[in-house]
Length: 256
Image 1 (cartoon, rainbow, N blue to C red):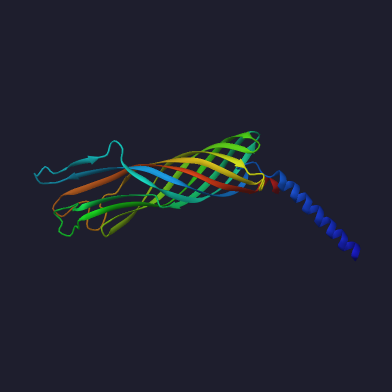
Image 2: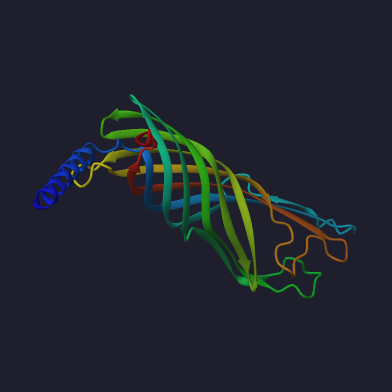
């Protein structure tokens, strides 16, 4: 019986040593199934366009459009990645999803109350307008090149969708905007801590295209009872700079 226990202990020790050797080699950055978390700064530009029309002869209809510049979005954001990547010599290919939240917003204030529809007696005077990006999520394809065994440079392309809360003086509505997104990153292995752990820095640009926001708020219908109308749309883009950690822990090839 003692010999059997000794044999089991010896096998367990050999297995532990073998596991340590495999772990010492580790995955290349971005290789296999990986998880990660990041934090960073988000910024962006919102360009509004408002077109008004009226059926009377007052001549008050017209278009306001920010053709240059716009309203700035700024704030911090944090989130996570999940993905799977293949290392093919010095070439890399993979798929990735991400989700992020933060406090990226813009806010406009006025000392004087402004009525959007003066003809509507129920319209309140607006003194503040605020838009907050609640969350962002998307999916991407990745292509890259290994600079060396411990460093991966990659680019990615896909689609990001964001939820925005737009509010003013007692009213709030939620809008969703999305569009094509591209990014670039550099991932380096932190072998001194764990060969499967990597630090990743990068940037992501998203074009939110154009979204209609007509009729914001219950007291501001797109068309009033007297025939006056207001159609609004927003065009925007966002840029995020991030730094985070990734950890690779599974390779599907190990199943075969």
